Image (cartoon, rainbow, N blue to C red; front, side, top):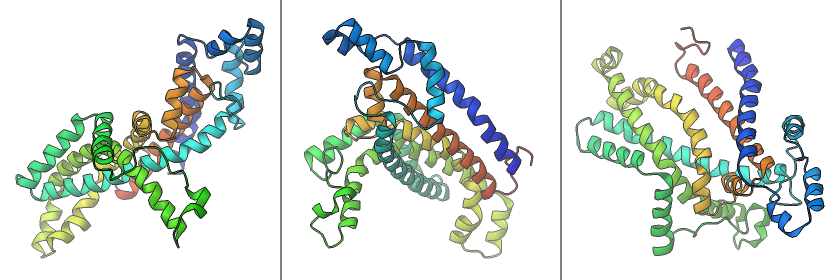
Length: 330
């Protein structure tokens, strides 16, 4: 295990360096000028002074100095938000993206595993048919269509949830809540703003988890050790939850790592629709304004998250099934 972890962690710098180079090339060769707005109002000398201030007079200097600054924890100033650093933006926006993404993956996992298990037990029945139908709808509908439908149906028509945005009071202003338990009231306030974006993000992974769980559980329930347990008089519920589900969840577990990363990365459009101050919203704005430090900072943060999540899933895979070695040998 220690050797496996050391090898995987040692691969991180190489992978991140490749991602950095590709992102830099894409951001740098894209048409437009991050200082075009200023150049219309200022003279060329002023524009050159701005480029020198932000260290973008030379692409080579920027390419070589920016990684060194990132290793020091300094991702530089934001071009599109003067007076604000990329560190400050990511520190404020990342918790929002993580909170919504985590809620979405929790919702997708519980619903997907539950529906998939029920469908495998009731194979060929009405519940199985409904689960396959829901899974097909979830795979077919893009998240932005689901988001638009939810925000139209449950906010504008019925006013069940807030119409996008983020709590104006929050944990930093608990005195604004007229409640004996202001912290709890703030939690429910945040939850109200997070439910619809999380639901929109969770539909696609939930559909895949449902199908994976169903197929895996059908295979596991047909094994000899399951039939033996049933022959010994073990109850059906105990056989499913104690003996079958553990092995049945292995394909789901391998799917959760990339799925979690995809939910976080895929939240860009959903965050924009629901006007969430998450990292996806700032990333879209940075691409539109050619804010290279913000683009690079966002991509590198998400890349580190993706690599870490995949590593955690590989380790958990061996924990769930000890017969599997994380080093590749069994």
